[in-house]
Image (cartoon, rainbow, N blue to C red; front, side, top):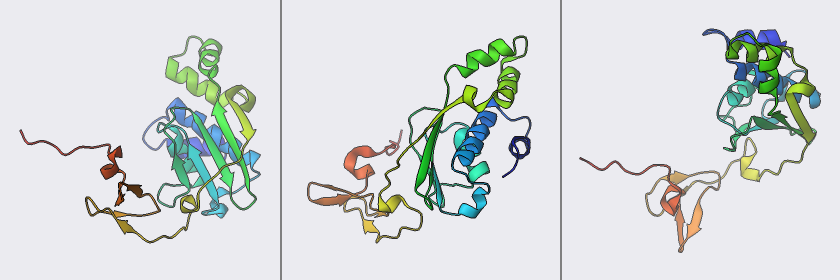
Length: 193
């Protein structure tokens, strides 16, 4: 595993990293240490991360662990929390790590006089894991279709005709529907003006 400075350098290709990236990298490194994983790249498709925010955390998880949406090892729960669960499928162990809410105030007090972003970056680099995070061992329940490598037959939505994979269809009123046609759409057709 790389050092914090090396990960931060990799995340800094387009300028100094945002404080959230530093905090998220620290979270991932801590999780790997808790799981006793020295080289996450050796855990191809055997390490799953479940992030609880769509801010800096998923980028850091991908950088440190190699977990990605595309290989089904990065999961997203839109809970608005700077927290993530990390699951080692080879040993059946998991930890959830969450940033402490008090850290920002402590950082601004400790590095008083620095601009906010710089104070946070300094604190997220210097503070101990115990100051930055809370963590606990957890159990993660994943359905078979959420495990990397799962294969299933695709079905067609009986309303729109689009294909649906990974058992994400919904049975409603005797029809097999995609989630959009079942009323969960995040979009609606644009109405011509």
